[in-house]
Image: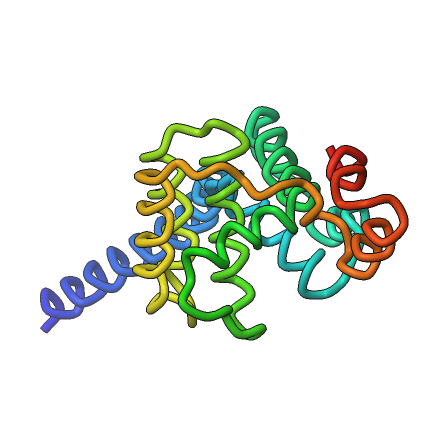
Length: 196
């Protein structure tokens, strides 16, 4: 019985020792896991900021205050280029996409619309390699409620790669009311030059 008691005590000691080692080890692993955390991609950050600007009606500065850019400096520059180029040419981008969509996407599909917009910006304005532009942009939608429309985004962007269309004229970037007022006053040709 004495031997059995000693064996039981030894087993408990080993378990206690193992538990102590694991308890000491856990924070260490968590610390390393935090260090290894990968920041969101430049495209994902631009996509999120675009949602804040177009969906929440925030200014770019307000959007950045809520969601500052992270990661490598080159990625941050690319995210800003995507965001600002998209906003600067939004009318042209949307006019081009309208040719490739059977009907406009509903407002609740803003994430899908914004992914398409970023795809157009990469393919027609920033000269991003087509494979990277399409693959990485489609990846933005592979998780979440819009995952079922990732195929639509892929099909539209692949068609854009194949067609290589020219963007509509820059007058599309003007608010419609302003564009009409100027055209009535100065003529369509003059407005086209002014919008360059």
